[in-house]
Length: 214
Image (cartoon, rainbow, N blue to C red; front, side):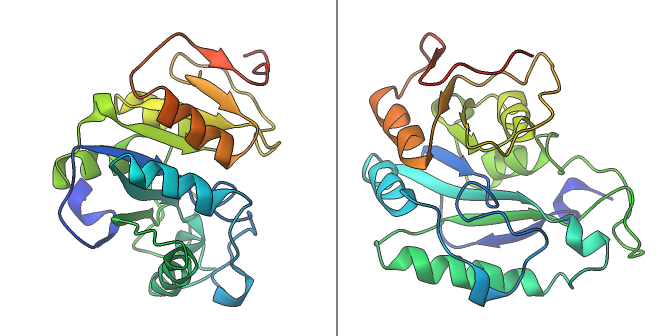
């Protein structure tokens, strides 16, 4: 199966030059496992203000999310549209526009015939980001990935982006690897956005909280 056919895509408009790639669960919204009920979707603290800051600096905002619940049969792939719509509604109150959503529906242990296999799009693989770079004409070297676990960091680093880890406790395994060190670790989303705005180019690795040993 080609990369183009293995990723669920929702693309709104043409791209700009630089982007911030955003993990969804645990980063933009609280992590409720396998939730597709729009009524349970809320935004994390600081997300509106942080995304406004990034948007004002000209960053395209793109969601990059593993959705293994599709492969596991917990919900149909069509339900991701409801998730997208609710997030868009919540963000619209702050004048924020998500340029594109990339969802990976695969998992090697899935039971839905179309999706139970290893793929290039499931984080920590960089396939979704690489596809967005190509389709939306994004410059990886000017772009960032924000996530709450090291799989997000690895995907961003492998794609050639700079990376910020939100140290909110969601990373519990700390599996080491050459691509699994973020450029910066922030305590929350707003801290991540502020760092990106104040450090648009790659600089020395800094942390506002010491990264756990790898």
